[in-house]
Length: 279
Image 1 (cartoon, one colour):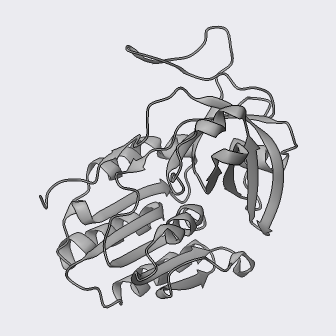
Image 2 (cartoon, rainbow, N blue to C red; image 1 turned 90 degrees about the vertical axis):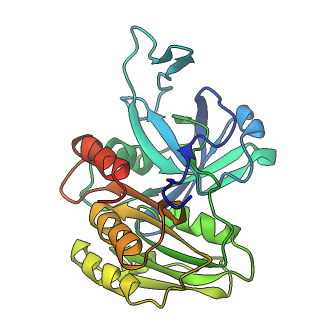
């Protein structure tokens, strides 16, 4: 079924959003902060969901309990009389139901003023956030021999989590653009998967794209996972589909952001990119 799209949905049992609290904070690198959240309800959180995406809910004051949407047969609604939270999309970096913990990584780039950045910058033990159950392609990682991945600092948490899920005999290549070379880290991965780091500002996206296109990609038993800035997704998805001849079912390509736009300003165009996978 070469014309089918990867299934994008909540791949785990439906559940209302839940509240979690900051338990600990770890600065993995100068620009990456990992926050561990805790809640008794995390004991029942889906295992194996590392790399899936979640919605996070942040209160206007960036620390109190946020209002959470109410799910019903009629759809989603918000509690009356309560301020709407900021809603953003992040990745499950790690989940430990037995310890009632979940890890989420935040990019800490200088000059950023978004609510998620400010929440992470000023986070203290006990601060509140809301999260959904994870969603993503089904399965999160296809069962293939060869994997080819591309992204930037925004998709590094997902790529790191997915590399840890791969079979030990998997092969492939990953290319990542980071703003700061100090953010380069050791990743747990199969020996046959090579990770290429490109460090520099947004102008280095061209180098990332050309690096990906230079790879010797087999015509069978391969899958592609691409996420990050808009240009990466548009260029590489077109290359994989038109130049390499792979069907949609082999490709997961999702834009997280677009240079020069905030999340609200990019929202509509982001969905256009996702809804037109052959563009």
